[in-house]
Image (cartoon, rainbow, N blue to C red):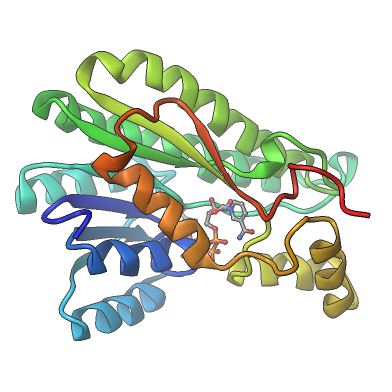
Length: 257
Ligand SMILES: NC(=O)c1ccc[n+]([C@@H]2O[C@H](COP(=O)([O-])OP(=O)(O)OC[C@H]3O[C@@H](n4cnc5c(N)ncnc54)[C@H](O)[C@@H]3O)[C@@H](O)[C@H]2O)c1
């Protein structure tokens, strides 16, 4: 029970990596609070986890909307009186070369992926500061450090999250709050399926291409990232501060033949 009785908040926890993380955190004894805009996915998750005896709460929260976020954090504080862990996971993709990318898509991806991290952290930090501890995990991506086709806008958001993480760590270290980032490679989730569907005629060929560019043979699973989040959430990572933890099958580690 690596997270026994810890109150862990996960944005975008309704499906994909966030949902897998909610399951792993609950198995480890955490009380999990999910914020998501996808109510159907949240309901499915809450049923699955409560059947197994886990303690989980879900709320309809749009991370780009300050009122929505602030109400969620107020509710969490009323329910539990503390926030041990905040996983800023909610994110959307944006596919396209920059000169063809709609301004509305630029605004959407920067709003969810960057402003969302700012708004939720801003709302949760006063509780962590008051209690004198906390662990914040921000969702970046390996794309923060490498170039990929048609991903300039998305990459910009993940680079921003990585650099935000490092400066947040400097500011909140005096309050015993750790701030780290996760940098996954290609994790096979609805997010990636959607990206593949929209980007390529032949999705199978695209998957084979994605596997080829990494060192490991298979794409990542949501659980691969969930266990990395578990480490950063738990006290075991007490000396890990301001880091970007890669979970990427070696895609940034070297080039396969
Ligand atoms: N899947 C990958 O290969 C991969 C790789 C690197 C980083 N990431 C990042 O991991 C995170 C999760 O990705 P995933 O693959 O699990 O995606 P996903 O689409 O499966 O899940 C994302 C969740 O975020 C929610 N969400 C979207 N906008 C929201 C908003 N405004 N407010 C609240 N919730 C919102 C969605 O409803 C969804 O449940 C994202 O930040 C993504 O950028 C994913």
